[in-house]
Length: 62
Image 1 (cartoon, helix red, strand yellow):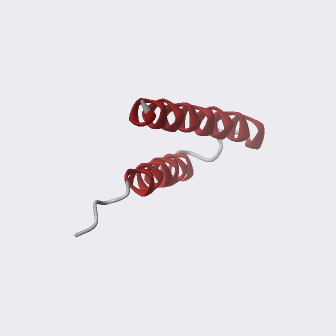
Image 2: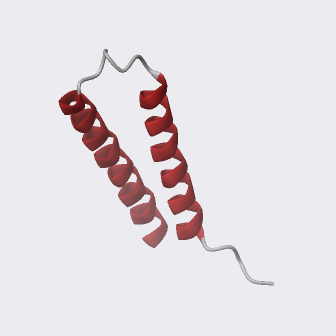
Image 3: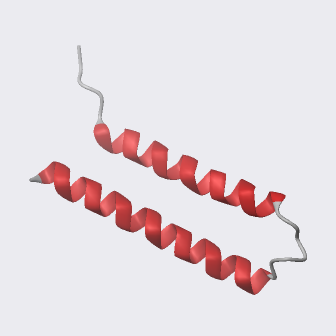
């Protein structure tokens, strides 16, 4: 039996987090967020996800 690939699990978690963040932002009052603020918030969220994935993969490689 093959061992599950951890990178695919981490990728799945990151995609789920991004989808959840997008759904949350879409559910909020649209007047509350301008498109500029939305882009800035999405950029920050994606950087945080990227940082988390890099940290986890760094721990696995050691």
